[in-house]
Length: 100
Image (tube, rainbow, N blue to C red; front, side, top):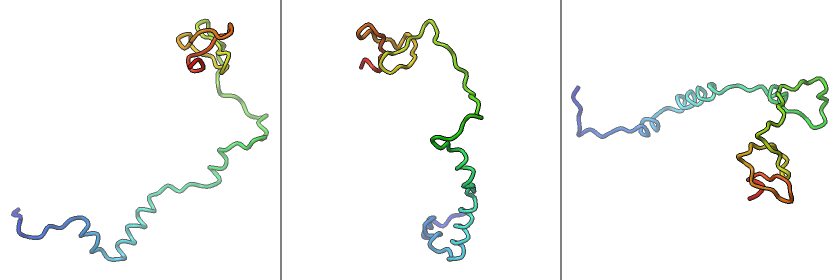
């Protein structure tokens, strides 16, 4: 197909500015209708309130005891691998994060 290089070029912004008001409203409604509808009650059920009764709930996390190659930091009280050991402070083990 032959192209006329002397004709004025049309850009996307030219095409949008010439659209009718009804077409623009229809496009806006189509864009909004593709959004996911979220039920407000579903989001509220996922939050736990302080002091809520959790006696009927079960833990789903498996707790593993401290291994031989781990230590408990005496400052942050977290269990770290021995590669995070920074030294002793007053005879107590300290991790690299707390030593810095």
